[in-house]
Amino acid sequence: MKSIKGFTLIEMLLALALLSIVLGALYSTFFLSHRAMEGIDGGLVKLQECRMAVDIIGREVDSAVYNEGNKYSVFTVEDRDIYGKQASRLVFTALSPLMPGLSTLSYSAEEKDGKLTLLKKVRSAYGEDNTDKGTELLEDIESFIVEVKDNGKWIRTWNAMESKKVPEEIRVAITIMLKDKKISLYVTLRPKIGKSL
Image (cartoon, rainbow, N blue to C red; front, side, top):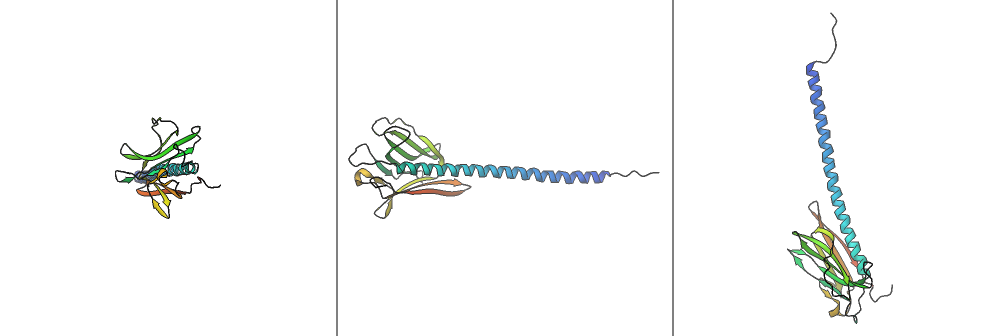
């Protein structure tokens, strides 16, 4: 009799068991890495949106226009608190590409659906129309803080009509949560109003 060589049933079952273990490990590794990449992408997008908001505010404050004799020009900073979170309001007049002539721009953190949202409002400095609902720049922020430096001190409230001048420096900070960590992005600005370029 000739013996036919082949695999036994035990060898086949053992090979199948090893193959299922290896495929299960590859499958779980693929989905873990996919989930991690989605989390990183979401965090990077939020960080990029925050950086863009800080940059927009910085550019527009650089183009701020204030004249003590002009009743339409304003530059104010209000210190507010919403549910224990800092929510400043910055209002100033500037030449904006969004509207011809002098515009009043307002940045503020407002409560929306239980979360803080950074809003931007633009309206004509000469009109009385206050119907602008605002544009959402950034959702779900931890805080929006605007501070001004005057006589070497950082303060959170300013009104150019009372002080008869704009502050020496302005610091704008936005804090967001990423992976259970608070991350703050900020910019320090020196207004060029009344100064030579």
